[in-house]
Amino acid sequence: MVDLTNIVSLTGWPTTRKEIEEVFVKVLRIPKHEHVELQLRVQEENDVHGVTRRQVVFFLNETELVSGWLFVPEGREDVPGILCCHHETIYGKDETAGIEDSSRLAFAQHYAEMGYVTLAIDVPTVGRRTYNKQEPYNTDSFYKENKDLTFAGKMLADHSRALDVFSEVKRVDPTRIGVIGHGLGGMNAILLAAYDDRVQACVASCGFTRFATDKKPGRWPDHEKMLLIPEIERAAKKKAFPFDWEHILALAAPTPVQVITSVSGAVHTNPKSCQKAVTLAGKVYKLLGAPGALDHFTHHDGHTVTPETLEVADEWFERWL
Image (cartoon, rainbow, N blue to C red):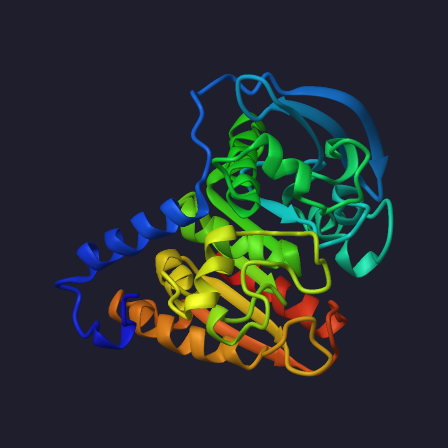
């Protein structure tokens, strides 16, 4: 594992970054597909609180279609786009669209009302992407059908593909793309910021704890059947991880990333370890001339999004997009 404390100048960072990236891609086993046209189609359109909500479908790859909620504010041009990743909810993208569950997690609706074009899709096993009538987030069938992939890698590839949708929406400025998520969505938001350089701002709430301090690394807390990264789970037995969350954050640098962590009542076993990851990755941000582009906000309200944390997210996007 690369020791980020040893990086003291920019001279060796490109080589070190490439080394981390290669291990990251190898461990996540991110699927690669031939480029295909999105063939974006609108299935339904409604006016919701002054913005247009469209149910759209598009091709993820040569054989797989996915549906999403696309919100477009009226009367605005060249606006930023924000991909909204849902958390570990049975409602999937419907939660981010404000159709089901908590209004504070309705990121797609919220940011559309603020003037952004927003998009949300389901991850595999949820909504229209269920596997053989299994419960949401049970990855058993996923791994039977995809022996050479990881669930985390598949979600990452799907979210990266979803960014292509913004290039099809004429009102979006493709140079101003953000991503936000809470819980599992927070994890996916950081992974996307690390992987896809189109992301220009990221907000991740309650998305991770360091593998080294996680009681069940490689799996999502409270979801025994959700195996995210098999190799990380195996590495835990040897106590020798190929990378940790500070390396993922370092891959995102200098993209602005707002990490939000609950330090009490959290779903993660050791949320305070997030600060260590942020501190270590912060060294890379500083070297790249962007010390203020990585921030860590903590609260004591448990695994949830509060009015205060939503305000932090709003200010981050207003500042960087």
